[in-house]
Image 1: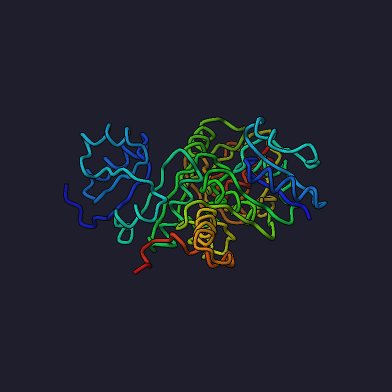
Image 2: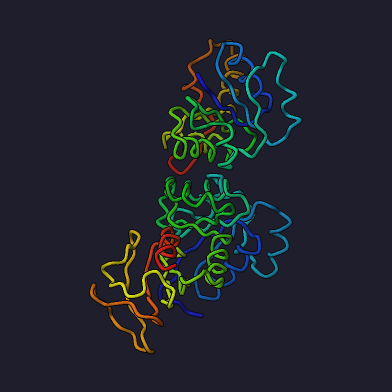
Length: 152
Length: 223
């Protein structure tokens, strides 16, 4: 599988390295060259330096040939915009955005974008660990912490 | 000033554009709320805007509810970051049903993407200034006269000289690009409404309306 990852932070670098080990073709984009130091020595994919919501960078990273696009920068809006760009401009079949804000994550999942709200998932796992409950399905955690006009 | 049709406009981002836009709308009698993330900027403008400037993140659902996004007629996102402007407008539209959203686009390449993603209108100052400049520069025989629809459609003038390749041609014989309409021929200070048999003479000015993207092809026709 060809995957493009935007954001070489701890999560981005970890996903990149493990998928690379599993034999996938990984390209990772970050605007800071220092961030690529997080990749371990066995990362054999491509590194692309640039701004992830810039079409030229996306072209350089060959997003148009990707089977999946993952956005894990530390900006929710940056992740939201880049996955929509990957989906609409580059026709990537599967896009996933990490979103910290539970409300925004839920709103965009309703719009058909796969989102992972690490805030909700992390909070849910911690709660279950404290209470000694078995861990649940990811979807059970997605609604935690959500608030908004449609909530009573 | 009284306004017969006051709107409730929420402006997100109190940079220079946001601040002056808010002031202008207030003077026109509209109900305005300016939302800004940065506390210092809010403090700077609160002397002149009072309660009309609010500290908060325009992408946070709680803030959006508090400022009454649900009853806004228009939301205008004019921050310096395209990703923020996109999310403000998409959330306003999808979560709060705001009928009209306008986004400032800092990178002109994002204009098409924003339209594809459901933003009603986009404004790119880069694009507007570029279009204005282009109209000032003489581009051979074809001179842009006016831009309609923010520059998507142009009215252009082509001069017929003694060396024009189309001198003596009938309008019907011109190999015009798509989406081009010849609306007039100016001859000896008179505007003629041409028909397919009108022959082009030296000194004529041909006025055409054209989609901007075909301007280059039109230029080639009149070289």
